[in-house]
Structures are given as structure tokens and as C-alpha cells.
Length: 331
Image (cartoon, rainbow, N blue to C red):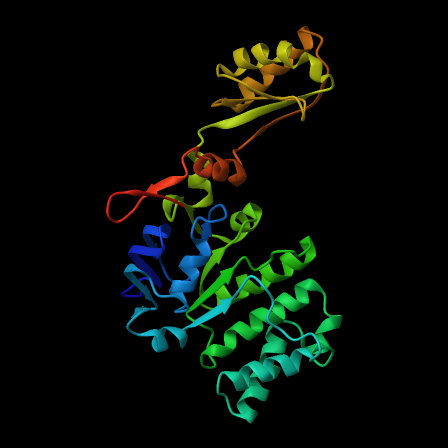
């Protein structure tokens, strides 16, 4: 058991003239898990990561990483963290091994230690067979794994206590994303706490044990992926019709079957409604649609997705938020 959380944020603000990128942010991240940080562009995700990794000073508030204050003890923080930014930092002209050896030297390792750690990290991230090839020949997933390996060179030989991943799989194909996910899970298994920012909701659903959704520079909601999905209520029955022109006929039938209001989507030819009794609703809907001679291409009952939760929590008409002095500013 750890006496302090891996990350503790209390009443954190970051102001750019009249814009408040962070606006009273509170967050606690326990040790040994993946904590997702979601939010639309401009919600404050990257600003929070930059403050937690000592790259930016907060305007107000307090942040601790691995028990150390990011403002008063930045050196202690840096020794305990790793950071993988949005864009790969590796040199394509150099080999994977040369990149890691160079990063080691930039982190003030001796030539022998830098070479030893480069070799060890290539093995750790399943890149040993290609370690002497130019990075220009690497796939996207391989480059990102190499970048992840380089992010571990800031501390000592141990796995970092806290690893910050700022949109780590942007631009990767599904295979590349899966490779990075596997590497992240391996690090967590070895005891690293991960703070993950991502715009891929599937990624958060796959990796995160706990998620905080940011809006206007503060936490709008948090919980496990299942807890956040449950905020939208019951499961949903979804019917896909062959003929989109008959959606208006199907909607009241589905509403009666589910005993709930429906939503229609002409582009997808769907009618959907929440339901608390999956089997009974499905049976009633099928009978009603068959009696009305409505041709169904697909029918299913599913849980709300994390995408729907995200849109529900962040799709607000207001673009202002309170500031420390009680006024409002656009964020």
C-alpha cells in the first residue's frame, strides 16, 4: 500500500491571458492502474500533462506526482516519470539502437550505461531483431514502441513510477495501436501507473481502469468505463429497417415494446430506445414489427458506448466557465 496517490491534483488552474485552460481541476490517481483523461479539444488534457511533467507551471493550485510537488520538487518528479508525447521524437535516419543510445546520453548516462540500456529496452519492447535497422524502415507501431522505450530513459534502471501517455496512438492503424496497447499493459503489470490522454474512446475502454472526463478545464464526470456507461441508463434496443421511409411507422411500435421514448436515425435507418428488460422488449418488438409487415435487417440490444457517454457529457451549448474571481471566460 502507498501512503500517497500516484498523482494528486488540488484546485489546479492554468490561465492564458483571459482563457482558463485548467479551471479548478481536482484529480486523484491511485498507484498501479491506467487512468484515462478524456475530453474534447481544448478541455485541458495536454495542459494538465504538461504541468504534471514539470514542463509548465500552474497559475494556481497544487499537483503531486509520486509524492513530490511538481513546482517545488521538479527534479524529484522527473526522476520518477516517463513521458510519451503526441508526436514521435525518434530520428528516422538512425537505427532503433542508436536512437535509444542517443537518448540515454542526453539523459546524462555514460556511454556504457546508455548502450546497455538501449540493448535492454530493445529486448523489452520486442525490437531486438530490428534494432540495427534505420527507423525509416519501421512500421508506425514499431516507431511508437521505440518512442515508448525512449520515454523510459529519463530515470534509473527501474520502470518509471508514473508514465504519461499523451494521445500515444494518434495516426496508427489497428495493428499498430494493438502493439502499443500490449506494451502499455506490460508496463502496468510491472507496477507503473499510467495517465493516458486519448481521443480514441475504444482505447480508453480497452486500457483504462478509471476515466475522468474533462470539460472546460475541470472534471465533468469520472468512474470506471462501466460506471460512466451506466450514467446513460439502461441498455438500448436498436432496430435497423430495410426501408428508411417506414421509420415513422416503426417508432411507436418500438416505443410501446420498450415502454420508453425512441430516437430515429434516417441515415442509419435505425430506431432505438432504452430498455430495462432485454428479452421481453426484444420479443415484443419482433412481434410488433412482423405484424406490421416491416422488414428488419438487424435488431440488437446493447449497452451505451463510451462514445455516447463522451458526447453526452461534453456536448454543452455553453462555451463559458467560471474563473477564480467568479467571472466567466471562454474555454
